Length: 77
Image 1 (tube, rainbow, N blue to C red):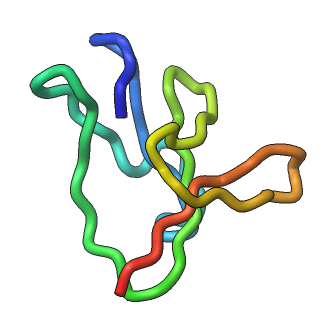
Image 2: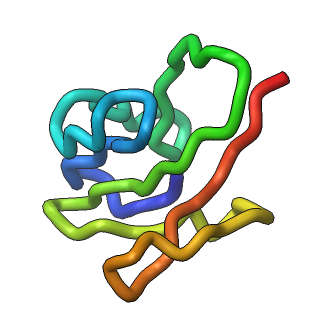
């Protein structure tokens, strides 16, 4: 995830009950990242940057979320 240095960046999704402050991302080498072990299957997620929910611009698959916007989708085999 790319965001300005000093931002508060989290990832929220089906894997953490959409908790916007549970999975914090760390700024290193010009990007924000984190690691998580996800079970096999389809997971929807969004980034939360300084309180603003954002889709992953590098994600190839998105799904409508019922709130008038999209969620990013990752499938783990």
